[in-house]
Image 1 (spheres, rainbow, N blue to C red):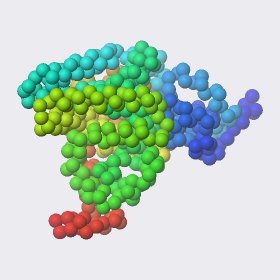
Image 2: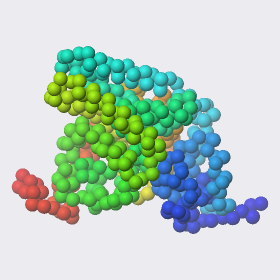
Image 3: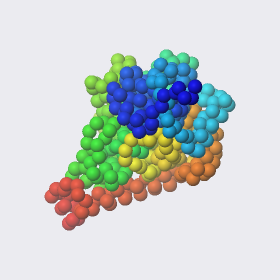
Image 4: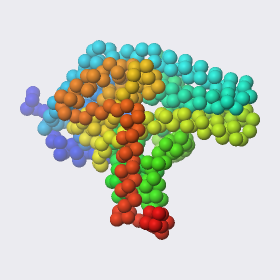
Length: 447
């Protein structure tokens, strides 16, 4: 029977790595997903990023056991001739199997219920503070509570995007729209589009959209070569404006984070009203309309424009804590250029992530994402399980001599600012080949 199998080499598999000709290998069996890629629930981009190679580890990470039965219809009849599994992948797959047998992927606790209940209570407090109180301090407090509401609501949306937090898939989708679109004004469709790409291509400068913030931020001097974003399909131009802004990014980081939500609102609208295929587009637009109805209406009940400005800025500033956290998890970690490689998927996750150490009673505040590496390795694992598996992940990293970085919130901020400052000083270097203008030379040559 072995002699009758048809084989192709890894080099032959690599040739099938583009839209319309997209093959992948899972545990040595080769599948043709060319016609199905656009129907993939996780989007086409993860498949394109890993096209033409073995994707077993990524498949195991993001799919439950029930997904295996759908693979047969894509089987080409070919097997990968030189298929080999690294020692770290063997250990990783063993862990996934053990966690599955222990029921850890299905044991979600009461996190979703408690989070949704807290969001409902906070929303009631916000309404009372704005509608029933005349004090400016009450309005300021309501704005701070709204910021915390957005943080917790985002965590629920994030959880529901990775695994089912409700009793059915329909209710899960409803939870996504309510916690994302309706309450925060940020589309769950946009989040899935960018977040899936981020997980697959963690910290790739040209494939991970979560690192592509030109002209405001650059975590590496390699952005100064005007890299082409394979996610957005455009060049990230390092022009004089980008050079100027990046040169002071270590000083502007926190102020920009305070208004970062404006960019998220813009990105949501650009996606929903683009020609790109968007799952549940009408559902997402309706959710956004709900947000842009209640939020401006709430602001209209404040007595004057200065208080409205204060309310918006305060709520944004509180929510910036979450935006900062997302940056801390990756900005100071290792980066690379090029597409992700399925053969070193585990290694790329350990290299591109940074955990934030905190006490268990602070888990609610960080939404489980302080265990960033654990989340990247086991994205379907409910957040209540991440602290439990952390020691196991740490031991596995130690066994295979892979980085496991865990810093306090303060130290993670220091590390991130150092990374931004290093790139800023490199951007100021007048010997850099990027284009310059008179304003730039005047400010940086003559002070």
